[in-house]
Image 1 (cartoon, rainbow, N blue to C red):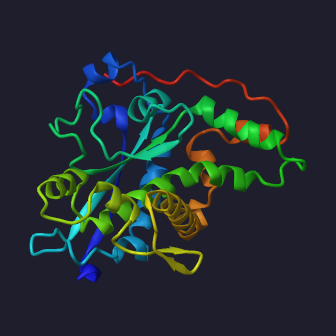
Image 2: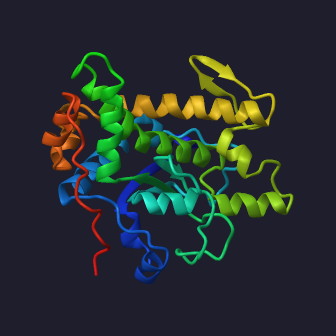
Amino acid sequence: MSEARQIKVNVSVFEDVLPKDFVEGYELGRAWVTSAMVDWWQQVMSELEKTTTLTQPKLNPYLVHEDTPDEITIEFMLCSRNSLEEVTGTTRALGCHLVSTMDGDPFNEETNLATKYRVLMVSDREEFLERMADLADDHIIQGSCDQLFLQSWLNTAFHEIAHAVLFAENAGFMSPHEIESLSDAGDIDNDVFDCATGYGIRPLDIQGDERWSDDVESARENMEVYVEALGSHLQDQVLVGDLHPMSFLKAAEIEDEFHHLMQGGEPDGGDDTPEPQP
Protein backbone atom coordinates (compact mmCIF):
# COMPACT_ATOMS: atom_id res chain seq x y z
CA MET A 1 0.00 0.00 0.00
CA SER A 2 2.95 2.36 0.71
CA GLU A 3 4.10 2.48 -2.93
CA ALA A 4 1.24 4.80 -3.88
CA ARG A 5 1.95 7.21 -1.05
CA GLN A 6 4.16 10.29 -1.00
CA ILE A 7 5.80 12.66 1.46
CA LYS A 8 6.08 16.28 0.33
CA VAL A 9 8.18 19.05 1.88
CA ASN A 10 7.18 22.71 2.05
CA VAL A 11 9.69 25.48 2.82
CA SER A 12 8.95 28.61 4.85
CA VAL A 13 10.35 30.97 7.47
CA PHE A 14 9.04 29.98 10.91
CA GLU A 15 8.60 33.51 12.24
CA ASP A 16 6.73 34.56 9.10
CA VAL A 17 4.02 31.92 9.56
CA LEU A 18 3.44 32.75 13.23
CA PRO A 19 1.18 35.57 14.40
CA LYS A 20 3.13 38.83 14.55
CA ASP A 21 2.16 39.50 18.16
CA PHE A 22 3.40 36.04 19.14
CA VAL A 23 6.80 36.63 17.52
CA GLU A 24 7.11 40.02 19.19
CA GLY A 25 5.80 38.85 22.57
CA TYR A 26 8.29 36.00 22.81
CA GLU A 27 11.07 38.12 21.23
CA LEU A 28 11.81 35.44 18.64
CA GLY A 29 13.46 37.69 16.08
CA ARG A 30 13.60 36.23 12.59
CA ALA A 31 15.62 33.63 10.71
CA TRP A 32 18.56 34.80 8.59
CA VAL A 33 17.33 34.40 5.02
CA THR A 34 17.78 35.88 1.59
CA SER A 35 15.28 35.38 -1.21
CA ALA A 36 17.90 33.31 -3.03
CA MET A 37 18.45 31.16 0.06
CA VAL A 38 14.76 30.36 0.37
CA ASP A 39 14.67 29.52 -3.34
CA TRP A 40 17.72 27.28 -2.88
CA TRP A 41 16.03 25.36 -0.08
CA GLN A 42 12.87 25.04 -2.17
CA GLN A 43 14.89 23.49 -4.98
CA VAL A 44 16.57 21.15 -2.50
CA MET A 45 13.24 19.94 -1.13
CA SER A 46 11.84 19.53 -4.62
CA GLU A 47 14.69 17.14 -5.36
CA LEU A 48 14.32 15.45 -1.98
CA GLU A 49 10.70 14.66 -2.84
CA LYS A 50 11.97 12.55 -5.75
CA THR A 51 14.01 10.20 -3.55
CA THR A 52 12.78 6.70 -2.81
CA THR A 53 12.59 7.57 0.88
CA LEU A 54 9.83 10.08 0.20
CA THR A 55 8.17 8.42 -2.80
CA GLN A 56 8.00 4.98 -1.20
CA PRO A 57 7.63 5.47 2.55
CA LYS A 58 7.49 2.25 4.57
CA LEU A 59 4.21 2.74 6.38
CA ASN A 60 3.32 0.70 9.43
CA PRO A 61 0.70 -1.71 7.99
CA TYR A 62 -1.06 -2.00 11.35
CA LEU A 63 -1.96 1.69 11.30
CA VAL A 64 -2.84 2.08 7.63
CA HIS A 65 -6.59 2.18 7.02
CA GLU A 66 -9.03 3.25 4.33
CA ASP A 67 -8.83 6.90 5.43
CA THR A 68 -5.03 7.06 5.43
CA PRO A 69 -4.08 9.95 3.12
CA ASP A 70 -2.09 9.31 -0.02
CA GLU A 71 0.15 12.26 0.79
CA ILE A 72 1.40 14.24 3.77
CA THR A 73 3.53 17.37 3.91
CA ILE A 74 6.46 18.07 6.19
CA GLU A 75 6.72 21.78 6.89
CA PHE A 76 10.43 22.62 6.81
CA MET A 77 10.91 25.99 8.48
CA LEU A 78 14.03 28.10 8.86
CA CYS A 79 14.02 29.81 12.24
CA SER A 80 15.98 32.11 14.53
CA ARG A 81 18.15 30.85 17.38
CA ASN A 82 15.66 32.38 19.84
CA SER A 83 12.80 30.43 18.26
CA LEU A 84 14.55 27.08 18.56
CA GLU A 85 15.54 27.78 22.15
CA GLU A 86 11.92 28.65 22.92
CA VAL A 87 10.78 25.36 21.36
CA THR A 88 13.46 23.00 22.71
CA GLY A 89 14.84 24.70 25.80
CA THR A 90 18.38 24.03 24.59
CA THR A 91 21.03 26.49 23.44
CA ARG A 92 23.10 24.33 21.08
CA ALA A 93 20.64 22.29 19.01
CA LEU A 94 20.51 23.30 15.35
CA GLY A 95 17.13 21.78 14.57
CA CYS A 96 14.23 19.69 15.76
CA HIS A 97 11.23 17.67 14.65
CA LEU A 98 8.47 19.61 16.41
CA VAL A 99 6.35 16.89 18.00
CA SER A 100 4.84 18.92 20.83
CA THR A 101 2.83 22.12 20.78
CA MET A 102 4.72 25.33 21.62
CA ASP A 103 3.78 27.36 24.68
CA GLY A 104 1.20 29.89 23.61
CA ASP A 105 -0.16 27.51 20.95
CA PRO A 106 0.73 29.76 17.97
CA PHE A 107 -0.77 27.32 15.46
CA ASN A 108 -4.10 27.21 17.34
CA GLU A 109 -3.98 23.43 17.62
CA GLU A 110 -5.50 23.27 21.13
CA THR A 111 -3.64 20.03 21.75
CA ASN A 112 -0.53 18.95 23.63
CA LEU A 113 1.03 17.45 20.53
CA ALA A 114 1.34 18.65 16.95
CA THR A 115 -1.41 18.02 14.45
CA LYS A 116 1.01 18.36 11.52
CA TYR A 117 4.59 17.46 10.66
CA ARG A 118 6.96 20.37 11.28
CA VAL A 119 10.75 20.55 11.19
CA LEU A 120 12.77 23.55 12.35
CA MET A 121 16.35 24.49 11.44
CA VAL A 122 18.28 27.40 12.88
CA SER A 123 19.35 29.95 10.28
CA ASP A 124 21.53 32.55 11.98
CA ARG A 125 24.33 34.28 10.07
CA GLU A 126 26.58 34.98 13.04
CA GLU A 127 26.19 31.48 14.48
CA PHE A 128 26.88 29.93 11.08
CA LEU A 129 30.13 31.88 10.76
CA GLU A 130 31.17 31.11 14.33
CA ARG A 131 30.58 27.38 13.91
CA MET A 132 32.46 27.31 10.62
CA ALA A 133 35.35 29.24 12.23
CA ASP A 134 35.48 26.78 15.14
CA LEU A 135 35.66 23.82 12.76
CA ALA A 136 38.37 25.48 10.70
CA ASP A 137 40.40 26.35 13.81
CA ASP A 138 40.34 22.73 14.96
CA HIS A 139 41.64 21.45 11.62
CA ILE A 140 45.35 21.29 10.87
CA ILE A 141 45.33 21.79 7.11
CA GLN A 142 43.45 24.96 6.20
CA GLY A 143 41.00 24.74 3.33
CA SER A 144 41.10 20.94 3.08
CA CYS A 145 37.66 20.20 4.56
CA ASP A 146 35.62 23.26 3.57
CA GLN A 147 32.82 21.24 2.00
CA LEU A 148 32.65 18.78 4.90
CA PHE A 149 32.26 21.64 7.37
CA LEU A 150 29.47 23.16 5.29
CA GLN A 151 27.76 19.78 4.91
CA SER A 152 27.77 19.33 8.68
CA TRP A 153 25.61 22.46 8.93
CA LEU A 154 23.33 21.64 6.01
CA ASN A 155 22.81 18.08 7.22
CA THR A 156 20.70 19.44 10.06
CA ALA A 157 17.83 19.80 7.59
CA PHE A 158 18.11 16.24 6.33
CA HIS A 159 18.64 14.81 9.81
CA GLU A 160 15.49 16.42 11.18
CA ILE A 161 13.45 15.52 8.10
CA ALA A 162 14.64 11.93 8.59
CA HIS A 163 13.19 12.10 12.12
CA ALA A 164 9.86 13.27 10.69
CA VAL A 165 9.87 10.58 7.99
CA LEU A 166 10.57 7.85 10.55
CA PHE A 167 7.68 9.05 12.69
CA ALA A 168 5.34 9.34 9.71
CA GLU A 169 6.14 5.81 8.57
CA ASN A 170 5.68 4.28 12.02
CA ALA A 171 2.50 6.29 12.59
CA GLY A 172 0.91 5.34 9.28
CA PHE A 173 0.88 9.04 8.30
CA MET A 174 -1.03 9.99 11.44
CA SER A 175 0.06 13.08 13.38
CA PRO A 176 1.60 13.01 16.87
CA HIS A 177 -1.73 14.25 18.25
CA GLU A 178 -3.67 11.46 16.54
CA ILE A 179 -1.26 8.83 17.83
CA GLU A 180 -1.50 10.19 21.38
CA SER A 181 -5.30 10.19 21.24
CA LEU A 182 -5.55 6.62 19.98
CA SER A 183 -2.90 5.40 22.40
CA ASP A 184 -4.53 7.06 25.41
CA ALA A 185 -7.87 5.52 24.38
CA GLY A 186 -6.28 2.07 24.18
CA ASP A 187 -7.15 1.76 20.50
CA ILE A 188 -3.54 1.11 19.44
CA ASP A 189 -0.67 -0.65 21.19
CA ASN A 190 2.04 1.91 20.41
CA ASP A 191 2.52 5.49 21.60
CA VAL A 192 4.29 8.65 20.41
CA PHE A 193 7.71 7.48 21.62
CA ASP A 194 7.29 4.20 19.74
CA CYS A 195 6.44 6.04 16.54
CA ALA A 196 9.40 8.40 16.96
CA THR A 197 11.88 5.56 17.50
CA GLY A 198 10.32 2.45 15.98
CA TYR A 199 10.40 0.81 19.41
CA GLY A 200 8.21 -2.29 19.35
CA ILE A 201 7.15 -1.51 15.76
CA ARG A 202 10.07 -2.29 13.47
CA PRO A 203 13.80 -2.93 13.38
CA LEU A 204 16.00 -0.10 12.14
CA ASP A 205 18.69 -0.59 9.53
CA ILE A 206 21.91 0.18 11.42
CA GLN A 207 24.83 -0.22 9.01
CA GLY A 208 23.13 -3.09 7.22
CA ASP A 209 21.98 -4.75 10.43
CA GLU A 210 18.20 -4.89 10.99
CA ARG A 211 18.26 -4.04 14.69
CA TRP A 212 15.37 -4.29 17.15
CA SER A 213 15.70 -2.15 20.27
CA ASP A 214 15.65 -4.04 23.56
CA ASP A 215 14.72 -1.10 25.78
CA VAL A 216 13.87 2.59 25.75
CA GLU A 217 17.48 3.75 25.97
CA SER A 218 18.67 1.58 23.10
CA ALA A 219 15.62 2.74 21.12
CA ARG A 220 16.76 6.36 21.51
CA GLU A 221 20.32 5.50 20.56
CA ASN A 222 19.32 3.42 17.54
CA MET A 223 16.93 6.14 16.37
CA GLU A 224 19.70 8.76 16.37
CA VAL A 225 22.16 6.49 14.56
CA TYR A 226 19.49 5.63 12.00
CA VAL A 227 18.33 9.17 11.24
CA GLU A 228 21.89 10.49 11.10
CA ALA A 229 22.77 7.87 8.49
CA LEU A 230 19.54 8.42 6.58
CA GLY A 231 19.99 12.19 6.65
CA SER A 232 23.54 11.93 5.32
CA HIS A 233 22.35 9.55 2.61
CA LEU A 234 19.60 11.94 1.55
CA GLN A 235 22.01 14.86 1.48
CA ASP A 236 24.40 12.89 -0.74
CA GLN A 237 21.54 12.12 -3.11
CA VAL A 238 20.20 15.67 -3.32
CA LEU A 239 23.12 18.09 -3.00
CA VAL A 240 24.70 17.41 -6.37
CA GLY A 241 25.11 19.34 -9.61
CA ASP A 242 23.63 22.84 -9.37
CA LEU A 243 22.68 22.08 -5.76
CA HIS A 244 26.23 21.16 -4.75
CA PRO A 245 26.74 22.10 -1.05
CA MET A 246 28.97 25.03 -1.94
CA SER A 247 26.12 26.55 -3.98
CA PHE A 248 24.44 27.35 -0.66
CA LEU A 249 27.08 30.01 -0.01
CA LYS A 250 26.13 32.02 -3.08
CA ALA A 251 22.42 31.77 -2.25
CA ALA A 252 23.16 32.95 1.28
CA GLU A 253 25.39 35.76 -0.02
CA ILE A 254 28.20 34.66 2.25
CA GLU A 255 30.85 33.16 -0.05
CA ASP A 256 33.64 35.63 0.76
CA GLU A 257 33.15 35.39 4.51
CA PHE A 258 33.12 31.59 4.42
CA HIS A 259 36.31 31.28 2.38
CA HIS A 260 37.96 33.90 4.60
CA LEU A 261 37.26 31.70 7.62
CA MET A 262 38.48 28.57 5.90
CA GLN A 263 41.83 30.27 5.39
CA GLY A 264 42.17 31.04 9.08
CA GLY A 265 40.46 34.44 9.21
CA GLU A 266 38.28 35.66 12.05
CA PRO A 267 34.47 35.94 11.78
CA ASP A 268 33.30 39.50 11.28
CA GLY A 269 30.23 39.15 13.47
CA GLY A 270 27.86 39.65 10.53
CA ASP A 271 24.80 41.79 10.33
CA ASP A 272 22.08 41.83 12.94
CA THR A 273 19.34 39.28 12.39
CA PRO A 274 16.53 41.14 10.57
CA GLU A 275 13.32 41.93 12.38
CA PRO A 276 10.04 40.27 11.29
CA GLN A 277 8.50 41.71 8.16
CA PRO A 278 5.46 43.96 8.74
